[in-house]
Image (tube, rainbow, N blue to C red; front, side, top):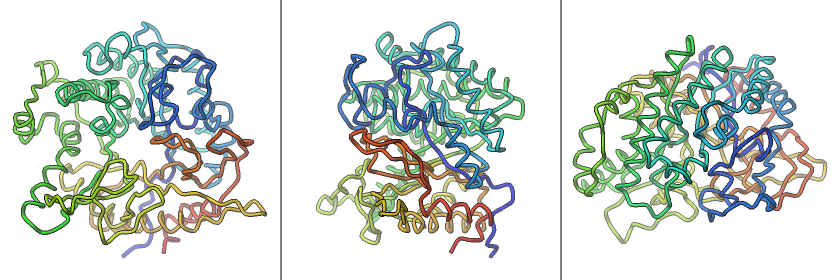
Length: 464
């Protein structure tokens, strides 16, 4: 087996605007759903007075410090950086007729800085945020008007950045709407499944329209979807467990099936019928859905198990997807089970299912780092985690899977999405900030920084 990854394989990291940029009221930016969640996705939703403060408001101040950070990414050897555009920087309320020039100019500067170091931008149109104005005025993705607003936004950024950005993604972890409706589709958390799936449908239609727009506007552009890779195993070989696992995996694969195949899969008819769900789908919607993605991207952090035995159905603590823990796997400090081989399994499943290129756009270990007296951070646990997962990516490539690249989550410490914490650190680069917002924001290199540098320089040959 070869130890090197293909020469065209893209190496880098991934961040999101609302977790790094800060500057929440600068440059004409409007109020986003993320701004209303100062304690993260699973924290309380609040009204903002403008005088209160949350650590996401400044985050790591990437808005002002990105040249320093891009230079550090280049020092590691990044050939790709995944980030997102804050929709509210471009259309502050969401339904304006014309985009905000200050917002467009900021991303011009960011993409120009990346180009200086030959770092390819991989840009997500909507990463866990949308204009709050669209929720207040129209009801978020529950209203078809939001489809048109999103298309206007997508066309604006495709047009502006068509020569600078060739790789795009539509919605981050689009299946997360099933677990966090406000974050995903702008609906109240207590919304019923009927409302959630109708909003999801509108988002899938919008994704199709964005694909069409990208293909029209961006010469040689490629646009993909982005799934939360929530792979489940049966806890036992009982046929009932195997069947239940199949059905639960379909609940998230459904999103990929629509975005890659261009129509609703047959199994969803029974799924909807059994739950009394009726999704309104027009002929125009069906045409829009036929605009399928060029590649499939996904996040991968953990796997879980499924059982039909109530006595065994003990969900893991701290696990955002509330999965049954696998007795054969260890867990992180946050209860996320560590399963490198699961990544190889998932890559094979997705490639067998879709036969389109795959891109791992999030994978990483959130952990509490210790800064030594000399300022060093010896994060061997992070190195081990990433090494073991990348070895399995290499195995999947040997299996015949077409993998475009790998962007680990959080190459620089950032505010966590689920609970808005700084103590849950992912980065190769340490940022001096704590959960209370104290610190200088100074950047420093962890041990893993130099490890990843070696991995990239050797095209993966340095992996063990």
